Length: 613
Ligand code: F6R
Image (cartoon, rainbow, N blue to C red):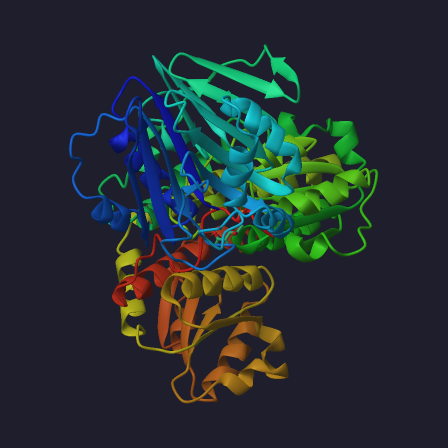
């Protein structure tokens, strides 16, 4: 959470900082700020504003021709301190000489704050970040890098920060611990940012910074310290990311664009992994086939939408491979007695590769000797560094805060793993595996055909007709349960309408009391062995006067007799409806939020990456 950027080089950087921040806005948008420094003039401009980047631009006004060649900026997701201008970054030392932007949390900040206050330092904000510029100022003796290296061991927690000093207007110093920070190397200029898209338009050459390293960057150079040692062998890597990923490409929102990118996310995630004979190649798992065949138990840990993908993964793996799967939210798993151990496979699912709870749960399992795999969308993310192996989704950058294409790509990646395990465990015959492989290959085309059909527009229409409803109940059975969870999460996070999602069979043990005349109930009623059971549950809610919005498989006309509205989903085998049935639910949430006039890409209080516990 929070996005940081710094620039030093030969160009006037005001616009580079602002547009870089806009590309990091998905990381938080409670408030934002930047500071520019120039040789001779010191700090030439500092602007901070509550709200998103548009508010910062408005507060900053037109560029009055600033030619400052060093800048640092921040977009905030508040942790310590309210959303106010005083708490927006950059934060400064008392004399204004040191400026800092930070992502993360300084866990011992209260102790440090009291220590500094006892020395007479007066704080200007409620943030944990502010201790850093004061500590640096206290250590500063003409060399910013030495001061930062002296301060680093005092800082507890996980963070990434960038610091500047007015007396060194050609230099930025940065450090990180368990929060992302990457350098961009241009011609006579250097960038430092929380994520590559911040500077992707300017350079594709990057340098990775490891935990607890300190880096000093200047227009033509960079120096990395690991403790007292200078790191001499850090390679520059070239990324081949698609620059357009950070643009809306003609769509009204990133979320809508990303919903439409699902066919390619699914195709690319299958890629060359699925062979014509139905076998699956996943070399990055870090387990060869013999070791994978010996896995007796799987634990899946994840948060939010990724957790819902994990729940689907449980159905897939248990059905196709007959391996027991335990799936749990990472924030609970990390604090329970962990029973994973050698021989177990633990899969941490995190699209960003940064979610603090998922990383912690993965570490707990790894310490106990389990083989830990990161299922993530971000190459080189912290999750990949903390794991024994990786399974990448290839969904491309996702910017809308509500996960869509990364979710369906996660389910596809888990399907590939389930298929592979199914063969290795002899739970699937060669013919059975071949059939499933064919079904998997058909899914991206089915999704593409659906998105190009009139169905999405019809879903939008139905959604708009429910825009004034105060509450929705979501129900499903079997794999429809995680699908209903995901549909309900999408609706609540972008429309702010309270939702409850429940296994349909459990409904009469409590949630049915919520229903009243006209209450909308979204029921996942796709074809499969529980279809008739779901229809019985539909009768039960209709008997209480509820209105039923059914998600049903294209061509199943029977459902029309039972539902008030039908959202059609592409035809697929029952288990893979976990991908196809989620599409109308994404669009339903989208249509409803738009009908309420809301900003779906930046729902309130949320951020795309959750790097705090
Ligand atoms: C909801 C959503 C969140 C994330 C959750 C985990 O649309 O996006 O619930 O799924 O914060 O994030 P990752 O997958 O990055 O660990």
